[in-house]
Image 1 (cartoon, rainbow, N blue to C red):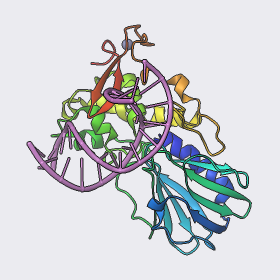
Image 2: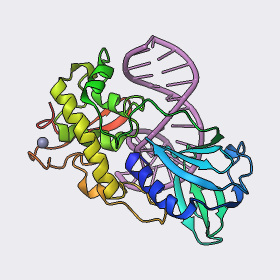
Image 3: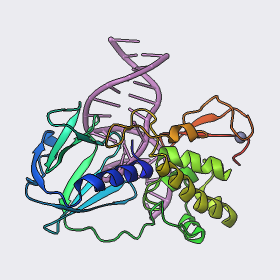
Image 4: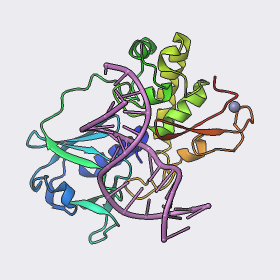
Length: 257
DNA sequence: AGCGGTGTTTAGGG
DNA sequence: CCCCTAAACACCGC
Ligand SMILES: [Zn+2]
């Protein structure tokens, strides 16, 4: 599920309810998370994000790092309400937080504060020259390059297709074949599209939900993702689906060269 | 019923 | 290195 806009949405909502709140008790439900020590007594000091990774700093100086992967979701719930596939439950003064995750790919680590990442986050202003430099000698499809979290942190399968459609670039093209003007488009549009998606509180395709089980709105603004066979909004040609590195990829053969 | 598809990341092999 | 595949897991729809 969550790419940058969805994780950002959760961060914003979580800040309002857990920052400066103490964990009264923690309950590990899924044995895969049994490495987590008890968290009772710790207070959450901040909630931040880099790419798709969420980081809480705690009052004892340690950090909790969450990677929600495909289906991880946080829900703020009434007492004794338990969603399906709950893996972790945290009781706060003032409420209860549950990590629900049907496919159980999400990870949670208690660790020292991570070193600042050298990788730009997708909501930062991206430098076209830096992208071009990173793409030198990379022959992989530009779509895979954009989804590589060591390039830009936060772009996933949905937004990669959207960015390349808006930029008019064929997702199959080798990353090293792009011209400077094309990197400029990608840099500007990546940030713009991710910002717009944040404003829409993310994309609720399949079943992404926010902290209060509300859905996002960006799925209505998707131009190509999931729209195989539909007419392109720009040129009316039929949108095609191809598989790149095992992932569904949607593009317009007319607008994207 | 079985197969292909689903937002992510990682290890491993060619 | 570089890049793809498979696997981690559960579910849904055809
Ligand atoms: Zn088009």
